[in-house]
Image (cartoon, rainbow, N blue to C red; front, side):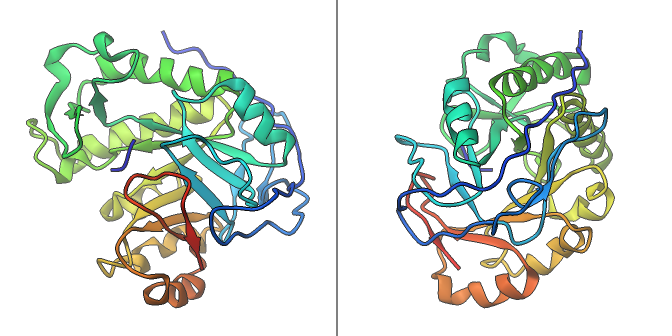
Length: 280
C-alpha cells in the first residue's frame, strides 16, 4: 500500500510507438517498438477497448519528487492528483503509456477531496501518515467519490489506473470487512475504470488473484520476492497480462533471476518512490 451519478465515458486511446529518453536515474528498458504501443494491445476506439500491457514490459514508478521524464521505459506510473494533463500529454508525445496512481481503499487527509468523505466511512490508520482505511462495504458513498477521481484520471488523459489499498479485508481497518466485501469493491473499481476507457491494475491482494485476474488488466505488487510470494502472481502472466513489481529491501541479485523466469517487470525502489530505480 504505497503512496502515495456515474457517467459512462469511453476514451479512445492514441496508438503510439515507444519513444526514447535521454538517460535515467538507473538501468532501463524499452518495448522494442511494439506496434500496439507500449507493449500491449491498444484501443481501436470502440466500446470495451483499452490498453492491455503485456508481461515483461519495463516501467518507472515515481510518486514523489520532481518527475524525471528521461527514464527510457514505455510505462510511467505517477500520482494522479499531482500531475497535470500537460504532463501526461508530454509523456504520450515521448511514446509512453501513463498510469494514474490513486488510493481507492484508504482516505488521505492531504487530498483536495478529503472533506467529501463522511467520517462514517473512515476507519483506522493504515500505517502511513495521514491515511486511514475506508469502509468498502459502503459503495453507496464511495462509488460516486471514486467515480469523480477516475473522471479526473480520464480527463487528464491517463491510459490506466493503479488503485491502491485494495486489500483492506486482510487488515485491521476498524470495520468487519470480509473477502466478499473486498471482491465486490475491487470489481466495482475495475468496472468504473473500464467504463472510462482505462486499463486497471490489481494492487497486491494476492489471495484474491484467482477470482480477480479476469477483471483486471495487469497487477502491481510490492515485495513478493522478500516474502516468497511471486509465484502467486503467475495467473496474470499466464493470461498475457503484465505484473509490475517493486522491491525495497532486497538487492537485485536476490530477485532478478526469479523475476526473469516469471516474466515480471521488476524494479528496486526506495520506500519514498522518488525517481531512483534499479532494474533487472
